[in-house]
Image 1 (tube, rainbow, N blue to C red):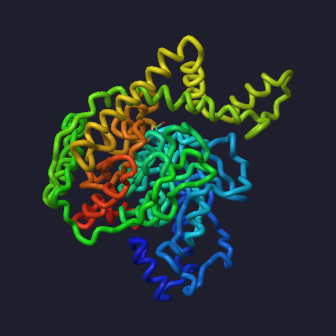
Image 2: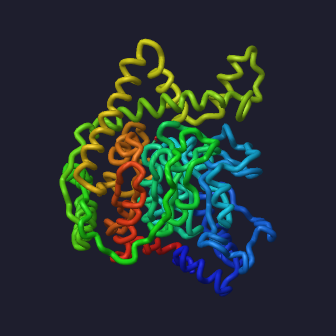
Image 3: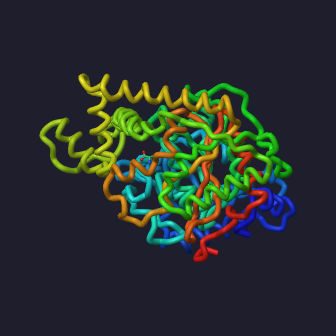
Length: 479
Ligand code: GLN
């Protein structure tokens, strides 16, 4: 049961072979059993209201009755929403994020909230105030970040689907490290209303699931214009059309050989090349493309994202939002300082300082403006590449899931985002799908599409998954 697709689960529900109560309790039992070893969840919805459970006659639509876990960045009415921070440890929002309300309108059952790096800053999930998340494939390794809780939960099948967010790689990299499928849609495709902000020009909500088909079904229900988010785009929403058979004839796939060469291990290189070969065996044509400015992406991102974060996080001052120090303070500035030093972890404080500095007069032109120019050049590079190809296939991460504590030097951790950040800066849709594992650990391949073309990446991944079964592999300890 736990390895069934959404379509298969829907069939069981519709044919009354299982009830929504039974289905949710299968997964809730797994949450209770396995979360102590993974720390993937911050909240388990132990008392799903029986009135919320659907009866078989109410199963209309593929998502009706399907369980889901939300990243703790998405506001859930009356349910604690922490963003992985002490600052919001006691915050229960009075409203649902648009993503949450759309999915619950589609009938999905929320089982709980997923752990994450504090305010979505990080690539390992070691920066959560509530403790690190473990990778189900090897508990000594990180699940990736910042959506590591969502990724570990799907990989260990505590849920068939989870929501997640991606600012510079936080859906793709943990999906790759945990051997699941995760899509970050185009910037503006999914409403950010009620999704706690990190870097507003980059943040985008998305989905993690076992397969591309499952991701397509859930994304279809959560995307689309929202009056409450002025950056959500008013284009036609699309309907997910799952491909009926693998046929990539005529599909032009852009590859960057220089990126594959930068992979840190021959096994990962082999897995990546093997996956590209599978695409050609299905009829795709590989075409070499170049993103000449992509080498500057990490440097530009770590100016722009902290700059935006420093502004977004100013509201957490103990008065308007968040934790307030209980210490006696002589004046309001001392109170702000104590509150923010207590409420934010080290990485968040580092970024607030970096961002404030990059935006300060005298440095603004040298850093922030220059980073914006680089961002534009990278977008132009992609435009050029997509004038030659339909989709790009590149690595997600230079290495497999690393051991906890291995990247305690922040810059080392930043560098690990080198293959995910370029598409984020350009706002493009991208996903990670599992390919041949390397030394028993999952490896992902990243597909990037032109702006607003989520379908080409989902459909390519779905076709790849028709002829491979890497996405169905599960970590042994959780079978
Ligand atoms: N690892 C990147 C960072 O730390 C990306 C995080 C994200 O996408 N939320 O900023």
